Image (tube, rainbow, N blue to C red; front, side):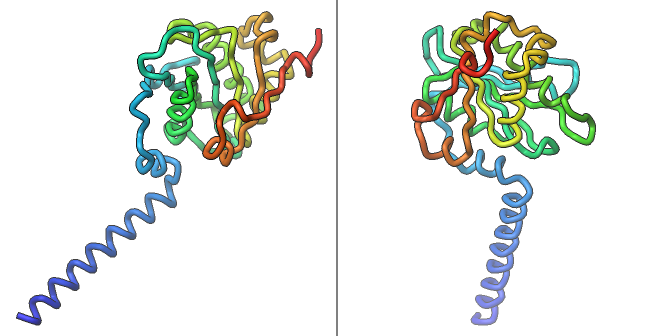
Length: 212
């Protein structure tokens, strides 16, 4: 009997060790998706749209999050994630979309083309196109197209700044000139997204940086 118990305990230990190893591999290989799976979902947020195309390339897609049962004319955030321009996908940043939507924003999280498949400035152009799509379609999801916050983290912050400050990208993407009056830039580090309220971030008006 004792031998059987010991054998059973060894089997249980091996199974637990295998599960631990599997979880560790998943976390290492896909940390953001693992974070999405582990973090409790906010019940007051809806994934209003998933995999919406803003271009012909498979990487030119976006997801839309909004507060559940919210009214119209919500402030809008377009979030561009980082990753060194060679990695990342919008699915890994579901927690960002849901967190910002829970704070009262219509939130767009978009993908962009990556190197080495493309070279500069393709990823900046995609970021401008995502903004153009947002401006044209925000109202349909209850957003206010005159209150758009352009948000970037790391490489995504570069995309945001370049797209906003070099007006050639907006012009090519079809972003209306009038949007310059309303657009706000915000560079948000991941630690801020996790630990601070959105209204505590530093906002920088594009109008203060670029003048006609």
